[in-house]
View (cartoon, rainbow over the protein chains, first blue to last red):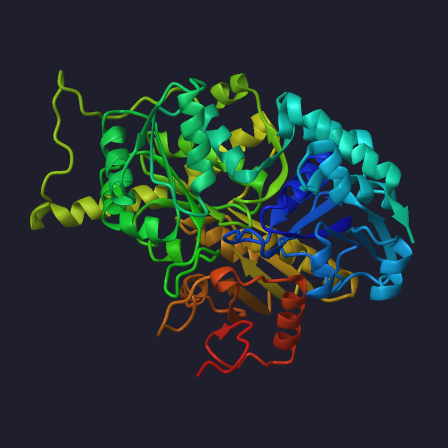
Length: 181
Length: 391
């Protein structure tokens, strides 16, 4: 089982990232759970979402306290709290940042870092700084959860014929541009 | 047969209601139930389900309209949570005493105050004695399946009672997970059209709900009580038929973990799954621990429960609601009363956990076991995870 905790700000689509990952996994015949940090959403406030992906039935209804992967949609979150709280000792932090993966790793001491400038990609490909689909490209590059193609169906279903392909293109580009340190 | 999809459980519940071909949905939105009725109103508006969606102005009206619609012989569905359920209170008794079949999802949420939208069982426990069949589900698939099965149970001529299916608010309502959605044809085979035993019909007038004068009230209540008690074998039968058609078997009481375990956790609802994982890990460490999950809360499956805990030394009963000023939480109180007459009975430890959305984790259950083995639970009940002495 791979447990991912997503950190974003309300309105950035972290819950959608969780949902897409879970749907992609379920479409592939795997088991998955995706859920938000329950409660009212506040735009701009730090929020979390959670994803579990497993080859076996998942029998757990607690939040994720010791994630394998932490996905950070907003670089400002790195400095206002410990996004890596509880992260496994060999865990991965996937960050949207314009700084290099090595620089982030050195600065925060994360065990493993995957970095991509998702805001720039999202602005180029989608015209808005919403990085939820883009960042999934970085996650898939750095972690062996699913193949990129596994998310195409879920993304196109979620975003429709006009925005779906654009979001998937942003994800593919992030996959290519992600650096790992 | 059918399809396996990744969906939010609330959306799956709406799909189950659609597959059940309900005639009337009468509901008022309230967190965390909202997605269910929102999706149903869309399904009806899109013409995917030929039903009347009554957007009432309150839950009191939602239940009143449901009662009226069921009395005309319609297949009726509603859903609510917490304050909404509380607002239905007086009409809930009317539905069961008129012996009107209907199905209600309760997306369990704590009752205010303090104001809370998060999960616990205080809403349904405040309605424990409404005379409805009350079922608890542990996961999305189970909620989906039991929602459809609930119509069959409610409408069976040997039952004729409303059924409430409880699902933990947020923990299940807002969860995306895989759900097997069966084909309409199979659901139709399982659930034939509703044939009411009696209905309001201008051509054949009847009176429903007249005054129960002292000469008749007691008998009427007795009949309702007997009907609820007698529904148990029918519920088992319906769930057996569900298993035969859909391949998923649900018992009234489920048991797992070490055979002849010394200590057994007792849960209702989604906590059962977390306990499952906790005891798998504890069993691997060699601990003699098991689990009993209560699926049917009303009528309480007394014999099945007694059978499931036979020979057990110690029960750790988890309640997700408080009975202030009482001897224990509602589930533990039920169990203690049930065991009173038994010559050999286990120690009953009662832990009130997960109030108002407080997460209850594997670690918590392991700590509970540890404390139980050391004899550290001294009080009638223990409110779990209190961060400071709120005394």
